[in-house]
Image (cartoon, rainbow over all chains, first blue to last red; front, side, top):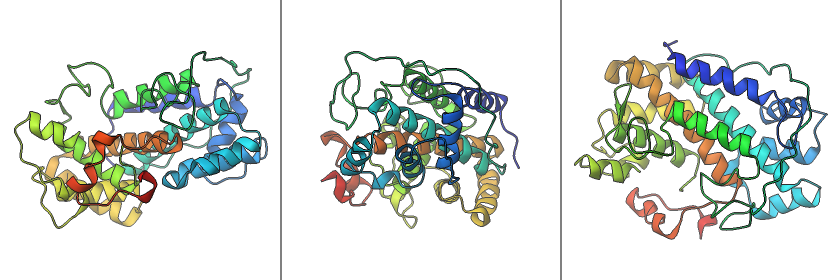
Length: 203
Length: 108
């Protein structure tokens, strides 16, 4: 096992606390069940379409098609629910991958926090280049428009594990000369490119 | 982004090295980073211990942990984009030629 920077351990703790809390469409118990399902466990308190979405996004994201998504929609899955599932599962995949990568065991599923979903509405989201409504053209910075808290979580994770999406100085994507923990920008992007290639993702 | 960072830093990078382990990309430590990334993303426990150890020897422990963190971040980003149906833009499509890997059929 290797030493992990405090900022990454703090990120992991912060994100798991948010994961087990009520979201925009799901309760804390349902969100925890979605994570359980993504990891391959049976989670009876969520619908089969939510469980199927979680598992597919976690295990086989490159095989996802619009026809498959439309099938989930006809089973009753809403776009807001789907976006929250995407955000949750993608986050957990990042956190678990990091833990496994450094030689640790992924966190156990936590106890959920009680409370109601926020049921937040996002006016102005439309279909624009993607399969789900977004604020502006679908892109890494807009795909989670319907679940603002998951968008914020994605930015949080990117800032700590990779580089901040905004800005031009320091540990930001705009800084082509950045060196983080001794890793040059080209080395960082080499790892990013290789990861995307393995995942069959070419954005 | 790799092309942009290499250009900005006046580095010569052979993008084919991203997809082909027999091609030296010119990125320092590329062989170790490739093996580490593959083991991390594919969660191969046997290869992971070896790859992590070799990357530590080549680049140091802090850089190795950062490389694992970057791979973890893109595990997230790839899923966000694939699940939302966001493929490469027209400007991005030549990336397949650059790395000498055919784009999947779903991108037309």
